Amino acid sequence: MKPIAQTDDEAKTVALLRAIAHPARFRIVKLLAARDTCVCGDLVDALPLAQSTVSEHLKVLKDAGIIRGTIAGPNTCYCLEPAALAWLEHEFGALGSACCGV
Image (cartoon, rainbow, N blue to C red; front, side, top):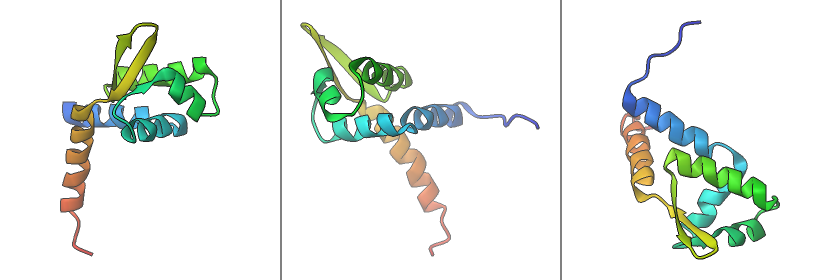
């Protein structure tokens, strides 16, 4: 099977989608969307996962550029990266405008 050649824009979109495709990471994104910022401990309390597992998921999301974090004393506060969300909205908006109108 031949690999599909991707444009840089396609590769960026696929990377963002891969990062949020995991159920726990999608839930983290939804939790962060419901708040302005979030401390990691709050996320651990909201998920049925160990703190280390939540941290790993946060790292994947941060590496993909979906979230950003700032150190605030002993806690790390995370929030969504507006540019990443705008990118996905633009990509999916382009798909919707290509629809046949049904």
